[in-house]
Image (cartoon, rainbow, N blue to C red; front, side, top):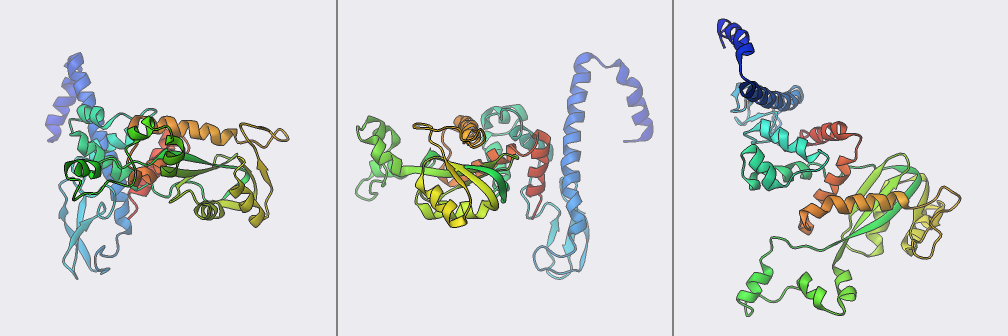
Length: 333
């Protein structure tokens, strides 16, 4: 904008009506979000000393992307790339709205994809795809060396094949498509033996916390003991005191590691030992986990690790700290 026109605009700002001022404020907030995101992405450009495709070092500037990022071209392979290439924000054409999606994911109560899409003027599936880009970048988030008093337990979720057409295909042509190995969940509700059969289709999520605020959650491939032992051995430090429920697998782990173990049962007791050892922290975490997952109505099991990582990422520090940590993971190639 010409400096003279800008000065005239600043002079006439005081004559704007209330609705015009509100609209101007919304435009400025949108631009601020766009600048913030582009500046975050552009910080990575200083580390781009080699081609992302062939590893060549002969790089030169090659115009800009449509979002305003500096494009680089490799003199060896001839391919172009920017600081957003190979990150979760690659090919995002509306960075200011993407920024709003990230902010919503770390708000007190995230909105549904449909509601957020209506607010931003985007299709709900665009919001869904962006959200999955973000949460896939969070895989593996959480503490890895918990110490002190450590509480461990499993949270079970029903196996979900949301989006699968297996039952539709089977009902349409049972001669070609055989019945899936698991019944529909509504069939188990009608069955008198649903508890015994349905429990085999529960997906375990191992959650581990310590009293200093460290948290970790991992989706286990099965309910057998070995995957659980491997995760415990990976995340619990040598100088820890383990508190768990009465499951014998935790006693096996504690004996093998040579650490103290306190088994507490919510049914038969005791619930507190020596005024210090309990599993109320992990039970509280499970309650928050369940309330967090409830609005999603059972995401597909293939996406459960990503939703689990999203839940843990929201607990890292405050909302701002958690969002900044998520941005660092998204912008890491």
